[in-house]
Length: 444
Ligand code: SF4
Image (tube, rainbow, N blue to C red):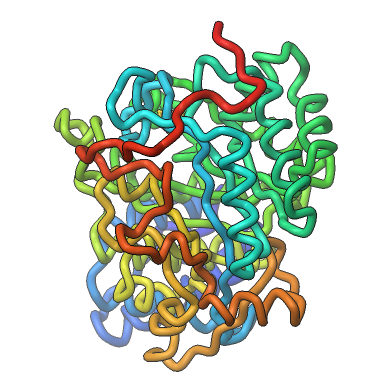
C-alpha cells in the first residue's frame, strides 16, 4: 500500500487498512504541529506499517497519550463502555510436551517430577465443576504429548459434552490441530470436521505468537509455520468454527512485526469473518528459556503494552470489534490502562490458569467476578458477562455464576488448586494426583 504517509506533507492516500489511521495521522500531525512545531513529514515512510513501526520506536509520552486517546474513543464508538468477560475454566489436560518452544515454561518431560496428564474422568469432573459454578465455557489446551493419539482430542471434547452438554467447548490450538491431523493421517479439514462432530465449538487462536517466520524460527524453531497457522484458522472458519486471534509480543519482536501481524489478522478476518476477538499476550519472561539464555528481552514495557493495545484497536477497526487484555499477564493496573486505550474485554475467570503462572506471571490463577469488577469499576466502566461468541448469557447461567462468584469451590479451597492440578514450577507433585494418559491413549 504505497504512499499512505509520504515524506513531506503526510497526506493520506488510502485508508485501506483502517479509517481510524487517517484520524490518527490527522490528530498526531496536528498536535505535533501545535505543540512541537514539527510535522511528521520528516519521517521517511512509504506505508502505514513502516510508519507506525518506526514511529513506535520513538514514542514520547505525548504521542502515546494521543494514540491511546484515539483508540479509547474508537472503542467507545464501536462497543460502548461495557467491559465484558466470560465465566470459563481452563483445563490444561497435560503438560507433557517435547516440542521445545523456547518461550515455554509449561512443558515437562514424561519423567519430570511436575509432569501430569489428566484422565478423561478428571477432565469430565472439572467440566462438571465448572458448569455447576456457572461457567458457559471450558477452554482446553495441552502439551503435544507424544503418547496421545490424534483421536484423543475427540475423546476429550466428547467427554465434556457427555457430562455437561451446555458447555461451550473452546479447545485445541492450531498446533494441536496440526498434531492431531498428522497423527491420525487425515487432512486438517477432515480432522476439524471430526472435532466439531465430537463437540468442539470454537478454537483458541493461540500458537500465533508473531506471524512472521523469521521470528517464529527464533521462538519455536519453526514448529508451526505462519502459513499452517493461517491454514488451520481459515479452515476452521470455513467450517463454521469461530476462533480467537492472538499475538504474543515483547520478546525478540519489533513494532514493525506487530504491524505485520495485525495486517495478517485483518486480512484473514476480511476473508472469513471468523475471529471473535483479538487477544494480546505480553511475553512472560521470568522462567522462559529464551530469556534465560539471554536471547529475548524481559517482556514488553508498560509503554509498549499501552501502544500495542491501542494500535490493535486502530488497525483492526471495522474488522474485529473486541480487543481483549490479559489480566493474567498484565495485572490489574495495566489492565485499567489498556481498557482506557482501546481494549474492551477482560477475558474470563479462568479458574485454573497454569501456563502463564509457570512462566513467572504472579497475578493469580483465577479471578472471581467480583475481582474482575474491581478492575473495571474504578475507571467507571460497567461489566457484562458474555458467552464465548459475545452473546448474552442466560438468566440461569448468570444466576449460577453469581452464586459462586464465577469460580468453582475446589479452586477456592485451601491450597488454591484442586486435586491433580499441576503444582507451581519447582513444587512437589500432589501425592494424590492420578497421573497417566487419558483413557484411550496408547503408548507409541
Ligand atoms: S508452547 Fe505448547 S507446544 Fe510449545 S513447548 Fe509449550 S506446551 Fe509444547
